[in-house]
Structure formats: structure tokens, C-alpha cells
Amino acid sequence: MQASTKSLLAASLAALALPFSSTQAQSFGSAEQQAKADLTQALQDLNTTRAEIAKEKIPLIREVTKLEDEVRQQEAELNRLRRLRDNSDGGLLRLKDQVEAIKAQNEYAAGLLDEFVRSFETRIDFSEIQLYSETATEARLALEDSDMSQADRFNKQIDVIGVALDRLEQLVGGYQFEGLALAPNGDIVNGKFAAFGPSVYFASSESDLAGLAQEKLNAAEAAIALPGEQFSYGIQQFVDGGEGSIPIDPTLGKALKIEEGSIGLGERIQQGGAVGYVILGLGAVCLILGLIKIFEITGFKTATPETVQKILSAIGEGNTAEAAKVAASAPGAGGNLLAAGVEHADEKRGTLEEILYEKILVCRPKLERFLPFMALTAAAAPLLGLLGTVTGMIRTFQLITIFGTGDAKSLSSGISEALVTTALGLCVAIPALILHGILSRMARQKIGDMEQTAVGFINGVIGTRNQDKDAA
Image (cartoon, rainbow, N blue to C red):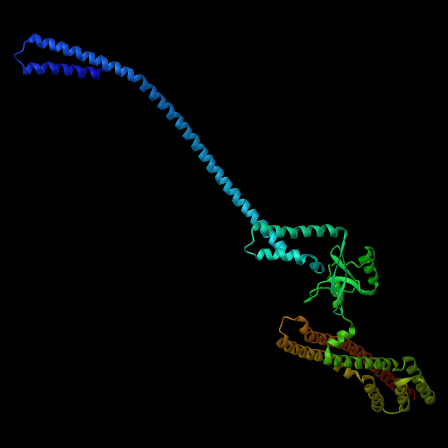
């Protein structure tokens, strides 16, 4: 407002100055009137301007106020949108985290399903594969189909889970199904299976064959193991009617495999081959000779101290005939020794010793015969076992060059020969060594008894002579 007034005053002064400077000839009165007129006009213009300004100021103020309100509203809306954006960003991050977590759970579940599908056929009994092979095969092929959607793949896998759950429900009380099985003679037979707990039993519909179903290497069907004739009828009754006496294997088939793998003594000896038969023959001869030696040594009689004392008493009394009679009554080699002593009782001590020692030497070979052969058997049997081990390993390596190392059964004959011959050698050597030691000890004991008898007889005879000399 003040700026407008100053502008009008300046314009008025300028208007007054211009006519004054240009028309100095005009009168002062006319100039004054003109100035007043201009001033009046300027004041009117000022008032008009003021009125216009006042008239326009109110709408402008309203407009400014309105615009300020709109700005505040827009700022509030902006803040609200910013908050929404921030909340949306946080929600989006949470959603992303949830999506990642769901993806991880989905991948984990898919991995579990894949593992379950791949191992399903290995977890069920081998005889049940013919029941569930179609469902398991479809699910397994779905894993390898890259064009199949994840949902379809899940459906195939869920079918396997459904089958597995149904199987578990049936196993609680046992269930039956028909199928094919491999008989012990290699024939494929038709019959009925009965699953009860971890065991599956089979009864043929074509014969009296009954047993436990188990997996066999390189066999497409479940093999039938025969636990024994005493269980056949009970297994048939159980498979056909659900009741019967059946064998239970708490080791989940291991005991049955051990029973099937056990062989008799004849088969074990046969595994030793030619070397094994030689070892057993040597052991049999040693055993026979050992029995003979036991009877020989136990039947070898030596003189008792009472008999020796009777003979010495008779000799001391000068009754040589009575002494000879007592010596002759003594059994065995001991009697012969005393008879020779009585016969040569008058000889010198050295001569008498030589005569009696000769009798002892005659008995020694009889007592010790066959003992060296038994010692030789005890020493040679382990060496023969070692020979069998070497020949068995040679045979094993020959089989490896033909069949490779993949088939263990083809190598079992050579390995069995290598191990069985060693065992047979030790089984023969140890008893032979013990028997030889016992018999040698018994033989030495008999010879010692004879030596003791001879020394006692000689000392008694010499003592009697000395007494006679002293008496004379």
C-alpha cells in the first residue's frame, strides 16, 4: 500500500515538474490547477487500485489457504503412502523369506520322498516286490523324467507312500498274497505268501513245499529256505488258514543263513582236497598206533618191590631154586629180568650189571616203537596243512584269472582248501603231539621201573655176599 502511494506522489511531482520546465510561460495558477487535478486523479486511481487490491486479496488469501490445506493433505497422503510403501517393502521381504522357507521345505520334502521311493523296494521283503513293483517303478521313473511337473512327480511319490502305509496296516495282523517263488531245486513254483511281522512264509499250491521266503543273489524271485521238516506242516497251515506253528527268526534271517551255510563233517573234509585226505590218513594211522601203544605199555609188567625182596631173601638163605621159582612167577619183562638176575647171581657185580642192562635194552625198543612215527606225524601234519594252504591259494588265483573277483562262490573252493587243510593239519598235529608225550612218559616210566628193579636186585645180591663174608 505504501509503495503504491509513493509511486503516485512521484508521478504527481513529475507531472508538476514537466509542465513547469516545458512551459515556463504558463501561469502559476494554471499549473497549480493542473497539479491538483492530477493529484485528484492520482488519488482516485490510488483508491481504485486499493479497492481492486482489497477485492482481489480475499480470494487470493482463500486460494492460498486452500492450497496450503491441499499441500498439508498431500503431505499427509505422501507420508501415508510412504508408510504403506515401507510396510509393503517389509511385507514383501517377509513374503520373500516365507517363499524361500517354503522352497527349502519343499526341496527337503522332495528329497525325503525321492529317498523313500528309491529305497522302498529295499525296505520290503524280497517276495513283496512283485506286489509293489509297478507303483514303485512308476515313481522311480518319475524322478528321472525332467519333463514331468513337480506336482505330478509328487503324486507318483505319494502313491508309493500310500502303498507303504497300507502295507504297514496289513502287517499288524499279517496278510496273504499269491506269487511265484524259487524252490531249492531251482524250479519256479506258484503258491501263496503270508507276511507276518518281519518274516514272510510260503506254501506251494503245487506240492508240499513250505518254508521262509528270502532274497537270493541273482534270482528274480524270492527263494524258499527250508527250516526243517518239522515246520513244513505248520507253515502250510499258517499260510492257508492263518493258524499254525511257525518258526520265528529274531535275527531277521541271519540265523537261517547261518544254518544254511553250515556244512557237515564230511563236506568239510571234502573241502580239504587230496592234501586233507593225506593228513587225515596220517592222523588215523597215528591214532591206531597210539591205541596199540597204550595197550602195549599198560600191558608191560614190571616186578614189584615185594617180589624183589622175596627173591633176595631166598638167595640170602641159599635157596636158589626158591628164588628162581619166585622170579619165574613174576609176569612180563620184569619176571625175565629177575630170572636172569637169579641165574647169574654168583657173577661179579660188573658182569651182573651188564646182564641185567642187556635185558633192559631188549625191552626198550619194544616200549619205544612207533613213538618216533607219532612224533613225525605231529611235526609233519602242520607242514602238510601249509602245503594245502599253498595249493589252495594257487587254485584260488587260477580261478581269479578265469572268473575275476566278482563271484565269491567261484573262489570259495580254493579258499576252503587253503583254510581247511591248515585246520586239519593242526587237528592232527596237536593230539598226536599230546599222545606222543604221554606215551613217551609212560615208556620212560616202565624203563625206569626196570632199572630201579635191576639196581635194587644187584645191591641186594652184593649186600648178601658181603654179609656171608663177614659171617665167615
